[in-house]
Image (cartoon, rainbow, N blue to C red):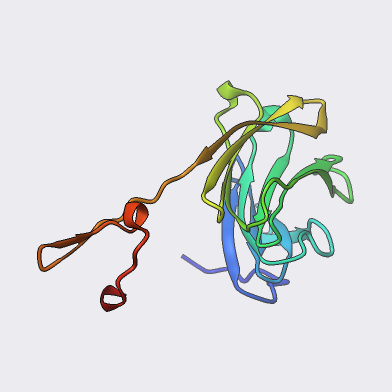
Length: 184
């Protein structure tokens, strides 16, 4: 198997890649604040890329997710800048220039968003996110033809239970609020 170089590369660490439904394209995101969509030219055997925008987010981008193609060519991205952005491809791949347009910006936290995933198409156009503030939030597009309007359906706090055993001494930092220095 031959490895193919991806050019132009990201300028910083690549944090995530995500294939589209058909496996013919993938998107990559990086700490360089860019999202690239890579398309395979099966005849030439090369990959070409399009930047979604000059700068897709204001800080490092952590994760990407493609929606089911029933909803169009949509990518969700999440970032250290505390936001989720929904991108839609305008035009078709047969045209000379396809452009990705930001359709929505979701910001319900003062903490970085660490992960984002579109649901199975059977649940409609639904998106889940995990934030550094300990919340999982689930959003739903109010109208699949107007992607600028999303509604937060669920906001769940995720509780981290950690129990440390040391010489028959049990410390539960969640309930006791104590973090013994000797264990860290």
